[in-house]
Image (cartoon, rainbow, N blue to C red; front, side, top):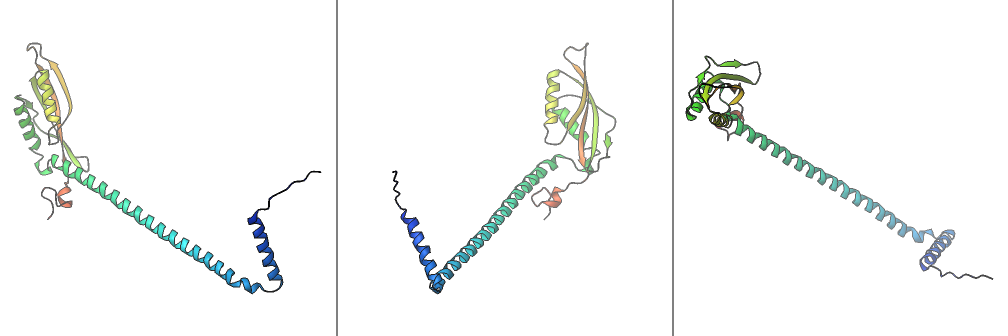
Amino acid sequence: MKTSFKTPNKYVESAKKGFNDMKLVMEEGNYKLFLKQIVAVIVIILLYRYVNGTFQAKANNLRGQIDAVQAQYDNEKDYQANKQKLLDLEPRFPDLSSKNDWLLRQLVAVFRDANISPTLGASQAEDSSNAGFTLAAIPVTFQTSFGDFGRLLASIENKQEYLRISDFSLTKKSENLGQNEITMRINTIFPKEKIAATMFKDAAGGKK
């Protein structure tokens, strides 16, 4: 014959005894003995749910405030970055009121510094079809060496004032060894409206 012994689990046995006692009391009509305990348990459950829900609501509200502050901080950084770009770039462009002679004066100064004597185009070509700016260009012809031409290109393209070379052609001079005849077109842009001075106090000539 096969016999097996199991050690009773004291927690299980205790629970069974408790339920049996409760059943006995309920059958005898003495359920009121448990009324205070039941009410206390219900109150604790409701209080826990309220506190937990209130805490969650506060946590969500705090999280929302943190997100709002972060968004404001990001917007402020973008605003300051774009503002600084405008303050840095806009002074490099000439005023529209100066368009008749500004580019000419810039070219005279550039070629004087390079010790090159250019022949400038008879008139300044302009294109105002864009709503935001007028494009101005002057063709220039001169003779120079490869080395001096490279330095001239760098000085024009790297000027603080906005000047750009749109195209050029180069022909070697057979009768003058080492020299080249160069024709190029130099451009600038005149904004039809400058807005930094009207928007920012720290812009040159900005609002008071």
